Image (cartoon, rainbow, N blue to C red; front, side, top):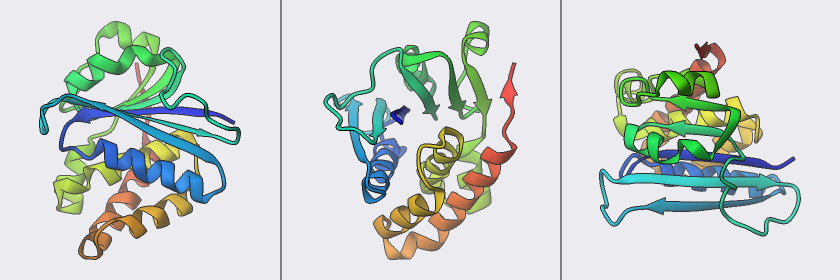
Length: 185
């Protein structure tokens, strides 16, 4: 099965790293995967997106096809509004509700879930830098694109040793919140 996912936010939020971890985990599972990022020259604060393609078959084009993205996660309003139209009608979008503000029409076009990703990282993990791992876990659980345990292990292999405990907690909390998430209408 082919999965086309998109993570978007602002530079410095770790969305590109999250995409890299997901793609690497899929490759370790024996599938083809590619992550392609787009960002402005502004290092921090500019809109950022990463498309992640996971497929059993060979991947010939590294970007998600606009209008065919089945899952998007956004932690920034500017990124959300810049890249949301790539999501297929009826697709799943997870937003950080404190920072992303969809229109009323968006709630009818897509299945939107509101999960306070940054608040979870900041207040429950105690490290806002783990927000990308919270988001990664949510995306994996909700999209069903990869084995959760394999992804967690890949993530732990890629993060610095001193952050493993916090990132493991962030991952587990992301899964926990994803399991409880409800579509907002």
